[in-house]
Length: 251
Image: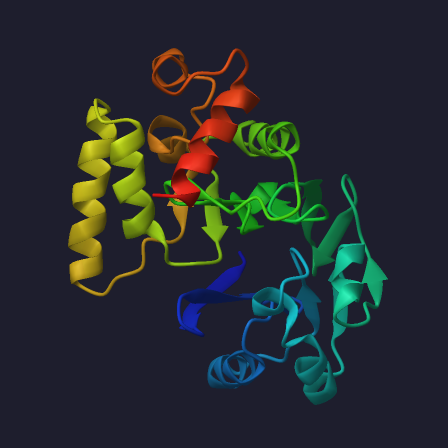
C-alpha cells in the first residue's frame, strides 16, 4: 500500500510525498517549496526518486530544479512545465507513470492551464488533481475555455465515487461561502460546510476530499444539475459552468 505524506507549505499549498514501501521509491506531487519537500522526505527517511507535475505554475513546479539538484530525481510532467524548467519525461493524456508496481493513469484536466493533467491511481483509490478541482471549488480559468474546463470536470466526475481527491490548496472555507451562495437549498452542502468549519477551527485540513461528496455539493461539478442551471442559466452545462466561474471570480 502506498504511503501519502501531506504537509502545508507556502501560504496555502499542500505538499504531497507518495512513497512505495516495497520499491522504496518516492515521488513529489508538484513542488511548491523545495526546502519543505526535502525536509519532509528526510524526516520520513525517504529518498525522492521522482517528481510528478500537474501544471506549469511556479507554486506547483517552482521547486523542480532544486529538488533534482539535491536528489538526482526524474522530473515528469506535461510539456507546458518546460516554460519554467526542463523535464526528463513529457507525458500527456492516456499515458501512465509508475511508482514501484503502482500505476497512475494520466488524464487531461485542462482549463486552469491548457496543459494541466491529473494522476489517477485506480488500485489505490486516489487522484492527484492539482488546481483543476478543489473541495467545493475549481481552479480559476486562466488559460482555458468553459467547454474545455467542463469537459475536464466531466472526466473527474467519471472516476469511481469513492476516489479520494488530493487537491493542492486549502481554499475550502472560501469556496464554501460561494457554494452556499450558488446552491443555497442544498441540505447536504449545508451539512458539509458545518463540518468544514469545525475542522478548520481545529486547524485540521479539509484535503483530501471524497469525490462522492463533491458530486453532491460542489457547484462546479453540478453545472449539469437542473436546479443549478435554472438558477444560473445556460442552455448547456458548460454555459452554466461559465456563469458560475465568472460569479466566483467576482464573489
